[in-house]
Length: 557
Image (cartoon, rainbow, N blue to C red):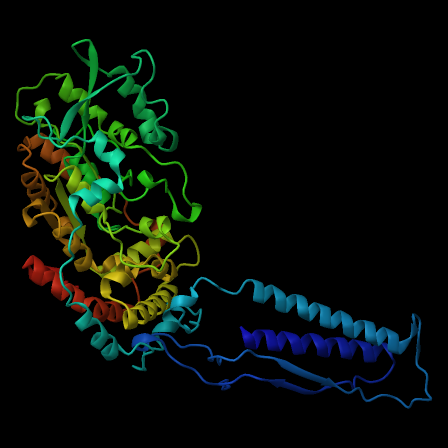
């Protein structure tokens, strides 16, 4: 960019002097005698390459600011010769044109400076290299060099000792309850026996003639819930006892907690075809991670908190059918066996809210995690995790959440910069701090931290026993759909499916697949895959060791 500014600056001034001399009736003789670039480290013609010998770079800029020294000496006519122009004295015209040129140069320079990319926070700033904007074919021709800008051996020396840390110590239950007393005043300590989902009766003090969902914040912001609220209202039923009215309330029986771009959407909507799970309709309420604190998108700041009652309304369709059985004789159709559930893909990893709620002090590892609250509310919850090759997950995440200027080359550039930022964090902080750091996450150009599955899994295992967590791979789900779904329903202790229902479930079209325009971009560059494979290798090894399953090495990728 600095070189562009320099060239534009010189070009503009030369044109102005040239034009001024022509007006004066002399040959263009005014020249810039001296233009110097004070650029420490600038080397003309120098090129570098990104990680794993991928793409050639533009010249590096030094760390000192640049400046230009302009000394203009026009070769003038003798002083006794007075050059006239139709507009008056020539020197005045020349001066005005010179000032006009300087003004235009200033405006061009300002337009570039004001649009300078300031996304990387100062705390973790790493000077990244600019990647050339050539086509993929041109980029592939640059693969001859193996020189890298990320020293992978040094990075591995940093990562390996960071992976060995003591298990997280979960906070005391009383401390968790004190953090959100209103939540735990609504949810009882014990649930109704004989019902598979965690349900209880809550006293209802409103008028039955009024719409109980009118003020629900999910109804305001969610079209799916707004459409279902009419059906919920028509089926709204109460239980009367001792002159009081009660409504049945339920929490999710299962949580599909992550990760993003790992097939959670497809899994959830196939599970709705099971007779015991058909009364769920909202996949991702993101209530535990964001909305109960008043956050929908962190960039918009805190808004109105979604109360727990609004969250419980999402499971009223199942509660109504459990409360007022609609028939059915088979085990899968009995209302008491209905399964409530949700699939917010942020539940496994997103604990950023603590930084926004307590942002005045120095950033630390979050004192409480989402799983602490879920476990305290319902210790018997079933947890399903869907994972995939972290390199492929990251590329899919990039394609899905980036709107414009997407390319395999751009993805590589962002990966390189993100790896550098993560390495910078690890130099002075713990692995868990860097994984959960909100300021670092906001600086990463791709969500690299979401692929460090082992850190999140170990923290969930600090509160939930291993037998309550099912970990799946998208690769197995894609190649053996029927077998994977059988494993899921067995884990949830759901009844067997009739042949017709199983056929419909397997034949259902896939959900949330890659868009056609993104498919046309092709796969990531081979050098990007090598870089991400090397980066994730130690984390995948520990994951495979904890799960005692070598498929989580993703060595077949």
